[in-house]
Length: 191
Image (cartoon, rainbow, N blue to C red; front, side, top):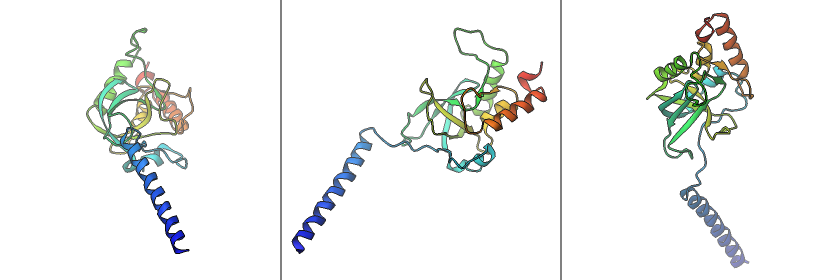
């Protein structure tokens, strides 16, 4: 009886060791789990989200593509590339880089706004459940170290529009920021 119990225990230990080994080897072989900050479903506003800044994924902004798209550098171990293109959630700025279209009004200003506030700085990223868009860009909210949501700042200061074509968590905050920017004739609304 004791021998059977001992044999069962040994089999269980060997199976557990094998499972742990397979998991560890699989991660070393290029299949790490993605360890980025996902916004908890209970978070109801940008203000509530900004209070969680220390939990967000830190990155360095290495290039500004245009007002609503940046390139960031990740630390190893996130499960993402070391450099990734990030499309800012909830905002659309006038085009500056589409070769099929002329530079749109206020596009250069929106790009300059992003360069002045983000380029070569450490920022924090927060992700919704959908991590990437159709073009394989990461989709994220970008937070400055002081807790300011840069995505929302673009809209509030009139450098872009609330991009409501696709639903996102804080759509109401962005719509309200655009409404106030329009009423105050900020940025591109100043005609």
